Amino acid sequence: IELIKPRLSLTVIFSCLAGYLLASKSIDYGLLVKLLIGGVSLVGASNGLNQVYEVDTDGLMDRTKNRPLPTRRISIQAAFIFSLILGFIGIFFLSMINFRCAFFGGLSSLIYVIGYTPLKTSTPLSGFIGAFPGAMPFMLGWVAVSNQFTLETGILFAIQFLWQFPHFWSIAWIRFKDYQKAGIQ
Picture 1: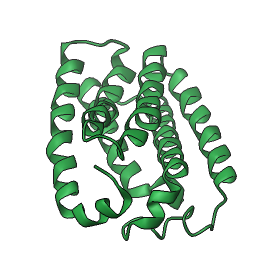
Picture 2 (picture 1 turned 30 degrees about the vertical axis):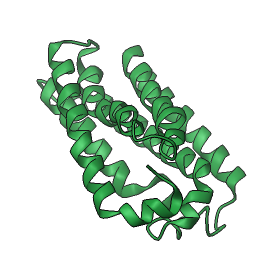
Picture 3 (picture 1 turned 180 degrees about the horizontal axis):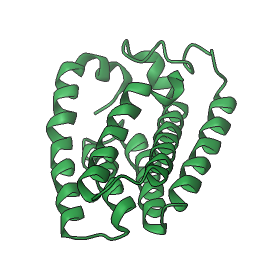
């Protein structure tokens, strides 16, 4: 449970649910369950793979040093395999809704894991890259209902994309010394 970062996963799923509710005229519980299972699984997979990649830097920071990988409560191999399986489950459930939902969910996870995560220690531009997956959940909820990328979808994406910057900067401000220990820019 710690590996999937439940609090972070919950905020992402809340955004996804908000996009779903804004787009729907009535609640389709079957679709909603697929969206939530797919979303939680993909976010959990992304969070797990992030921790696999950052196990060494997590061990240096006060905020993250007690996570399961730096403390060796979970092996890196087990976390990696668990996260991959969770990712496939997420893509599977989102593909049961529609192709766009699975595509945008998978793209979001990919950008987070292979774009944002490794760039955090090398460039402040990582925040720009990280804003893309950060903005996807709201849009994903809308696309689950409509199976379209419309002006409304783009506006939801843009709002959440722009919100990512003050979010990143406030965390960086509060955790500045902790981030310095791990070499995060």
